[in-house]
Length: 204
Image 1 (cartoon, rainbow, N blue to C red):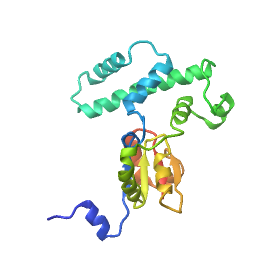
Image 2 (cartoon, rainbow, N blue to C red):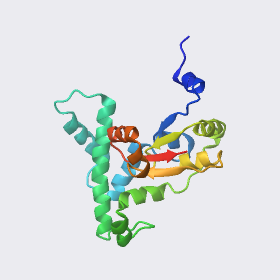
Image 3 (cartoon, one colour):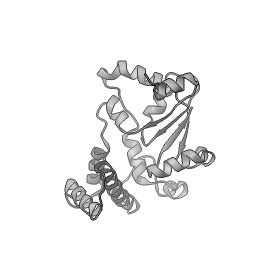
């Protein structure tokens, strides 16, 4: 029987690089949304007109015109397009004082070049609780994290960092986007560009 990549890592005493998306928080935490569920909530808060799913269908039709593209890629592109529209709307509402967001003001947004939408999302995820039925598996998950060298995640919550810190005395360092850590790791930088999303890099 041929060895798996995990067998190879063990034999070579190598530590893996782990990619984690929002599905992991939804799996372990109570009431956590999928990407599309979060977009729907933010769509309503953005005060954009029309039905959310009708708009998704419209964008999908536009993006699929004249293209032979796999369904999951098209879904990703639709979500990115709509998320960009929602961000523009939310940021506009904040700039016009039509909404307030805890923890930020106009001065802070300007000086730190913050996105009001991203601050709003972080506020939604600043606390969480573990699903009772996932507690046993969660212990295995933390053990897996403790074996990683680097973790790449698109999540806005701190669940990954918190989970790792529960099993390690050496706390993680977190880098946002391509600054800091990634400027010295060109191979990872090109990977992040391919993913085309803002990614948190957790160095262990």
